[in-house]
Length: 163
Image 1 (spheres, rainbow, N blue to C red):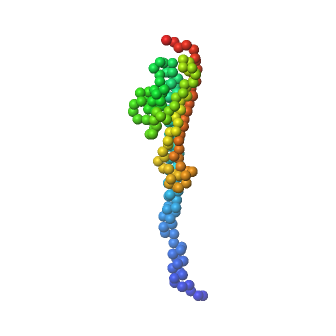
Image 2 (cartoon, rainbow, N blue to C red):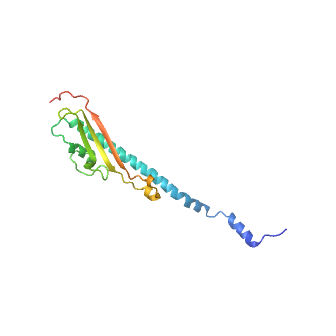
């Protein structure tokens, strides 16, 4: 029987070794895991932001419907309620980048008998922390979007007010 050359034996022994394979697997899997976790976190932030905008317009519409018969009620007061959480307009906005210019308030009906109030947040620019579109070079994956939220609250009773 013929013996294999020593160099051939060494190459075979080297190819059978599995030292360092975990490091190679980690190098392949880690970037994918980071992108996946970043995407999950970013969608969570997007959902939280949209939920906050929706809650803000509901609060503004309730405020407007409650006070629409008062002579002191104004549209800027409702806009401040949506953006700052109080009608005085003091403090910081509930979300970064949100301003009263994003809020639109519409009273539906005649001035002395408002039937409903619509409060809208338009073109709020959501800025992601991890922009997957820029990181991967695929523009379709970007979450740099405009968010809109609106609600209409109707008056339940249009009769005379007690006073």
